[in-house]
Image 1 (cartoon, rainbow, N blue to C red):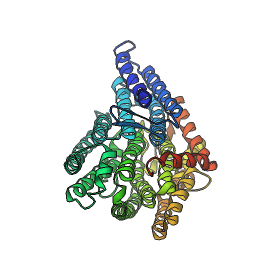
Image 2: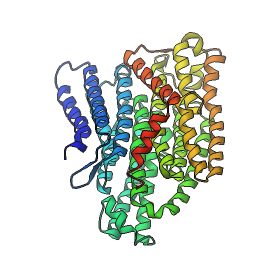
Image 3: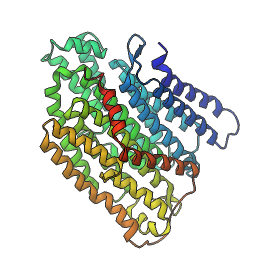
Image 4: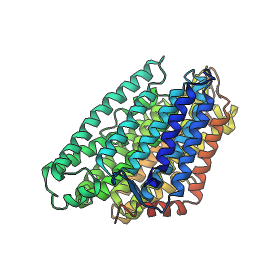
Length: 475
């Protein structure tokens, strides 16, 4: 059935077209490749929206189209489109404008979308590797910078280590059930709840997923990779790869291992508390904004795991809603940082932002709004996302977990607002910080800002769609 494959085929065909166009003149400027890649991703986004409400399978049931996959495809395409917009002038400014960058972004996007539609552990693994290998290369795209090479190497080595756990988990689950199809594993696991082979395999899968979503204790790679990678790539890793990781994790948990829910709920509850607490506490000590946002992203994974623990249509639907909120907010925050320069270098240190509001009030205001959304201040989307996540925990009886999450949000307010204080209440010293002119980057920030306030002022329609999307998983 071609229906489930249309968004995937559009992205794959665009990647092939970009490879061909890269061989043709002009050889020096690659902006037209970014436009082609952007058109392909936007086309895939609209194709996914047109498939809402339809169900279908492809490749013998290994790929599944349902509203859950459609919702995640939309989130991933939004992330990729905004990253492509941010990349156009950024790559040229830093002397790394090459056609393979856009090919790798498209291939990473294809892997992420495959993870959202995968209904078989083998497909999840293949999609995971397609996404990961592309991101490993993108993380080291600053070839002349040692920090970029270091980030790529750390990402690769730790990713390969986590992949080994994931593959071994698949092997054990296949040994216990005789299949890698998620629905058949669910049927077989009903009578094998206490089978050690199945339980160990499931635990090893969680290790692989924990690395991809950067939950504690599998978060070690995040700060170094976020700092060393090009900022546009950092934005893609922080948003698209997390959406893909949660897509596969939620499908495995709720459609395949639902019978073991009491066991993994307790495990994820502990992981959620550790993840949000460690992320927020260590973020306080960071003076580099990319490292601060790296630890912040770890904390936000903890918040999303609160929704997974809560379960039900509201809990899981809130996770999907929060992934969309987080995509707009995080890409916007990294996009604002990406546009700022000091002494022809990226402005990533906290001191670089001192007095920024006096010289560039509009960009300072935009960055402040994205940071306030990450805090969870109304009427931004961050407030609505946290309200639904924590409310789901309260409804499910995890009141103390919601209290811990709220306290963590209060801790997070300190390091987010510290940047705002520097911009508005500190005097600048040394070379001034200023934005690099970028029409495409400004457009990306405008779209992200629209998403932050649209989802903050009118969250209910999108939350309803998210809850409808998770209905197939919870049957």
